[in-house]
Image 1 (cartoon, helix red, strand yellow):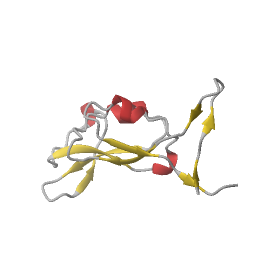
Image 2: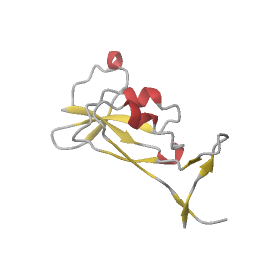
Image 3: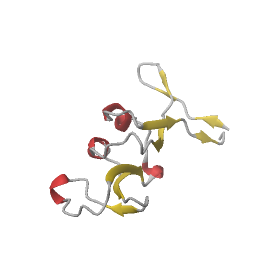
Image 4: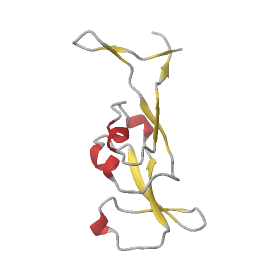
Length: 106
């Protein structure tokens, strides 16, 4: 098994780092990462007092229901991640962990 490494036109090597996890304790549910990700990787959810997840809108104006304690971002579709790390770069609380993907040698 080896990690993917790409040679950029400049000649530099780059290894994509894919969204692996989000620290829900640090996440404030601001939605900045959701807005910057164009790949449908992330989903905003509400957490109840019991830890149950409830679907919510990423648009604060559409969010009428206050049935949850707090909103957090989740990695709903990790297979869509292209490893750009834009979510991590825009996150004000630095909640993201990224990792290189292992792939079989071709």
